[in-house]
Image (cartoon, rainbow, N blue to C red; front, side):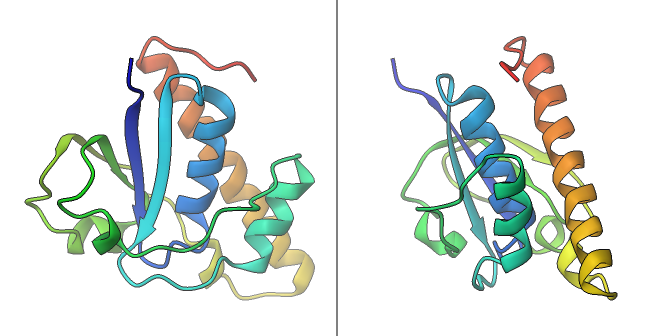
Length: 146
């Protein structure tokens, strides 16, 4: 049986959507196939890699991709926008999408502060995304293994 594909979309595909992709793969990789993309992709933020490695999730193999890589090419069970900009600017007619959700999550990359303050912000957003994924999985009646 094919796994339901989930696409997490944000502006740069450098932080929030990358974290969400990694968490879904970790928590429910036996039930979902996780993807992420950005409207204007940029490199994965070093703080993203750092805070995910702190909790044992290595983003090796993940890289920033543009949404056009998937438009009209992959059928997704879910498209989940994880930032307001992506929600407002994502094409409204995205062929092959069964369900569309929006999670308004703060962009940790936009936070100004010291190295430690930036790390704290990335950790805060990381933990919020993990809870969001866990809650969504419970709502899907799947639960999480973590």
